Length: 369
Length: 102
Image (cartoon, rainbow over the protein chains, first blue to last red):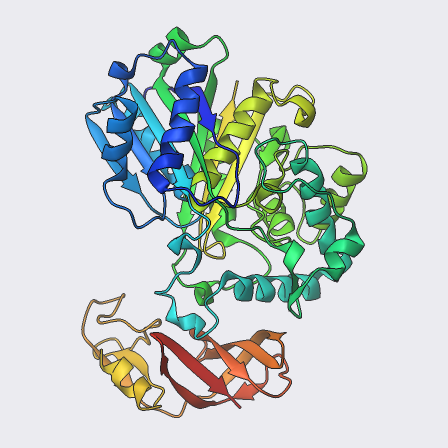
């Protein structure tokens, strides 16, 4: 299997602006090419677009607008983990020898149709993600004796970290009281517990080992991949206080990279809602069941940016198709020691956790320098 | 799908494999175990509340039937975990199913 590296990235700010999907895809891709003028577009074999948007033929459109004539061009949709799933597809093309260099570009608009899974009629009239998030929160709080105030720390921490990220949607910091007093959506969920849909795009260029070494003197390698889909419908989740797909995907990724979770220096986890962060940390094995909030409190109190340094989905916003790619870019910056005020202490290994539809599906990537 | 025709009439059924008798949920055309056709089990199912929360005056509950089928239903009175309930009203509105329990 051919080793796969990441050689370049580009992004747009995450906003509430009304831009065409084609326009924002082009913007992050253009940002990538402007930053890396050494890249020869003729050597790009595949262009993959990650989005839930209804627009058609986006990979061919992006290729034409960017001046690329790839062998392979198609879109990938998998709700919220479309981004990392696209990276896995790119990895597969390269590691199998079908491609030497693959551009992956993800984008979403604030009004994406991917926010609600219409198919899942087992949710009855409660299809919006706030309902599964409320059920997770209620179940998690009851099982481990966690309070609403405890969970509010996730939002406080991630908004604080997002303030150091110039591309994040949120520009404000909040206190626990602010979170507790924000609009009550249900008995178990407040507005500031939620990530927000937004408009944004992120792009990344993957290459074979030979090509990576030619193009960059700061290569980042994808050394672990794990994916698991349990179901599509939320009501198939047996546990409502842990993430089964995340456990399995995390274990697969660590096995592939020959690493133990204790060796991971920095991580981006999928905090679509406050409760998702401790559940993800526990399911990935960073801490024992019920101890995720203690870990988060400790990181917050010591101003340690190890988990969700870019501000998570809660702080950055959640443009579905771009999120997994944006998370990956953050880990690249961390490993290259270029994350400015968000920089953690010289990390060598990083993990990305990206999931869909109440953790019915998860993707975990491990990057190393 | 015949399931939806029954649901539109306010009848809650659970699709069941004609061959292996597995209950299939969410409703589908074929058994996901043995790939055979399905029929509708029209028993008066009793469910158990697994978890719930509330939005405004309405409780929304995960209800489990026959230890396999789970759905989210609305309840007007305060639920309790493990409470036994029945579907009191169901149907399709604007393309989405709805279930009420008592």
